Image 1 (cartoon, rainbow, N blue to C red):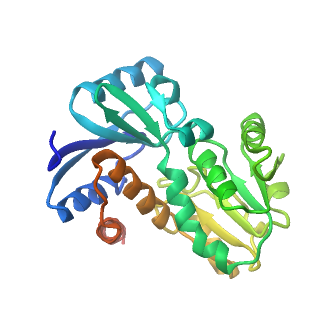
Image 2 (image 1 turned 135 degrees about the vertical axis):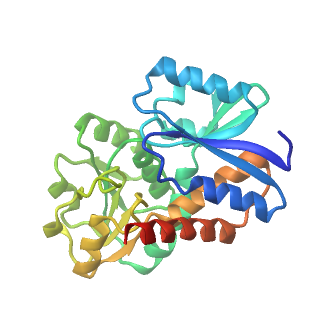
Length: 285
């Protein structure tokens, strides 16, 4: 691989819907370079499977790969090193190949922080409810802590996982885990879905519509579809909403810069993302 021609990819399942190939390849083209972005879609990979795939990434000339559900936490202790932010979060969504070493980063956190700032600046302050304490949930929690929110409440279908994330954040912000969706949402000024619930082909919602109201804002990390059942219900209730678009683009832009040392055009990546979404909508209409 050279600066002008490089190989990157995405490891996860399911990822056939991903807009990442279009975003990275278009960003490279806008810089006069060529990127091939390979989807590495493997269901049910165990530790030995992941180790073998990571060794292939190390040896096959990749500049790096992104990691998505369900492997963001599973890859952590298979890497040679983690940058401090990724180590604190305990999840990785970007692996950079540095010589023969694999270095873990987390651009979900930086991408979400930039995406959510305009919404936080224009809505009332108050407790924020986070649904999901897995890989992306951890990144979002640390991003919110870095933005100085007043209180974070965390719910996960695995109570121990929610409690562990709350423990990680003790001392940084006021934080607690909750035993139910109702408890975490009650009185919250904002709500973030950091679970795959609502991602196609799933059409469920992580929060009953009856708990949504106009005085709260609602964000979703899912972007396939862009308008999840949760966001559609929240908008119908009159709530301010944020789709997964800006998180996806911001995280991808930060990963591209780590892979290549070049600053990508966020506009080019956004255009590529929007084209993928438009084509998908047209195909399903």
